[in-house]
Length: 392
Image (cartoon, rainbow, N blue to C red; front, side, top):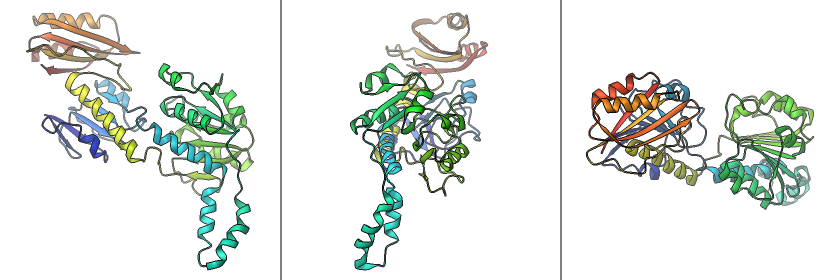
């Protein structure tokens, strides 16, 4: 029986994919095997030693202490692309209401309440205050062309915009999914200097934090409109406000409310609505559950943010065991691991070894039961981070 702890409300249809005969799922659970969450902050949590995996039902993982978990051999998953359509649709909405003051116009009309039959004429007379440009024919700069950025770029092409994209790490799959009408920017600075609208779709890392700052804003066109539905720390809010006050930035849309932003008339703050659709929540939950089940039941890893992709195609030998070993990617690790297996007089029936930067992961099937003695030997090897046994 596997124990799964939920730290947020997870879509019930997704959790239903855990077979109840083999899984116990609860928000309050002792010594869970895995944790599934959305935006809950795990940095201050006392994470039990029993935890083998963490799955984020969403793309961003800055709410998870990945380095600390990695040192324990805990695999961290996310669900890239599961909420891409939801975010894409909100970006399209942001393009429209950053151009045409739809929100302000709606507030103004509401204030006409009580004027009865005079309202239509008053509305007609006042509508000139809410004029804004069309997006067709304007240039959209898309920073980051992953699952979300690629969909945004393609949708904007369909709306008649000129689209330029920048992503030095674009994947082959993302490149194939892009419309041929999307132009490649040679550098971030080049994109910023050409775009009438800018939308950001990159993860928040040490390298990308404060990506949009005073220096970058100076490169932009006057009257640029900026949309950030990715992560709040990607922009320097004080620099954004200075850019608005100088006239450089016409409007800023953020999905991350902040005290410094919410009262500015040219800032539109949303309460982190990017993935807030029932479809996206279901999709993220489905993917997160599939990732945890594959890892817990077979040792397979995919969509991990810290360990390499790995899968054993063959089933565990009848009467045998599967060893799942995470370790530092240093010389002679595989030799030490296989020597430990041989010392227990176990024959290796199949083996997969994958690495990712300074980490590696092994799946080893053995003919026979892996003993506690073998597990202890493997854990004692310097550089081994975690050892798990799945019985056949």
